[in-house]
Length: 168
Image 1 (spheres, rainbow, N blue to C red):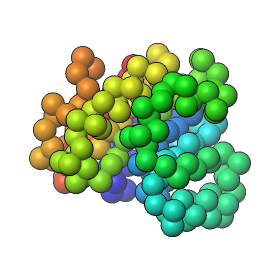
Image 2: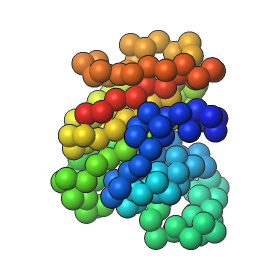
Image 3: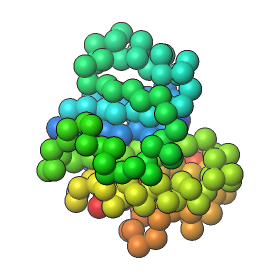
């Protein structure tokens, strides 16, 4: 996600996240979780499938002095999510704690596994406490029908991306 898009999304989500839990579902560099923690989130939980990237995330969290607030899971988040909410029990989350969920998968994944992404997002939506925030990045050309239905998505264009933001 480009810097200007990330800044716009953080503003759309409210800018501050006191005591929230940030879930970065396709972490990459985990910049979204880091940014959310810097804005008051109690913890960032990041999912990244590549081992080299998870090591880099852990090193960056240590360098930033936030390693106690970042949990890194090296796993396929789509597969892991099939066990929601039971898998979330390991995090010992409080029921009233706000979730901020970022879903910024590689654009090609929308083409190859769009329906799986849609199903995964539906699982997260159903598991998240009321008031939780969602930010989903899609390529500009990605069909919007791959987003879960029945949710009031605020769609914004930040070429070459589109951001879909919603509050549960």
